[in-house]
Image 1 (cartoon, rainbow, N blue to C red):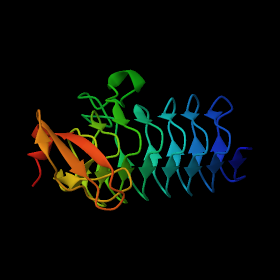
Image 2: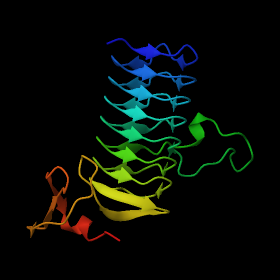
Image 3: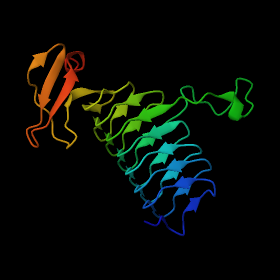
Length: 201
């Protein structure tokens, strides 16, 4: 399948774009970025230099994915999701000289496969969001999120666990420190560490 790039978008010559990916209006993809197959970038998406994006990723309108962020296969980023990459943001040094590229350290962020980030959520840099986790709209995520966890709020806290299909999981049998969680919709089971389940608020 051909790559589709809207004529209003600016894609660096050395950016890697996978087959079947669509890049819509007014996007910018910086040098060294790698975008996988069958991805969809909505209007006004910004992909910084050297960002790594897997296959089948959907990034909605006006999301900026900054240097140091990696999105694995199947990640969903809703409209206006905000990523960061600097734990100590300053425009200038203590002597008021403008910071250069050598005057700060990138804090990396990893969003694992299948995770969903709701609209207007803010993802603090230096954390990992586990596979199939779900972040509620408007949340501010300041710590690592376990796999399958449903988090929301400011700061975001665990309020349950969700199936890969998106339904909230029910607690099942507990054995050897693991909860056998059951999806009421598709009947799939997911093993969740009891220590993570006990963090539900």
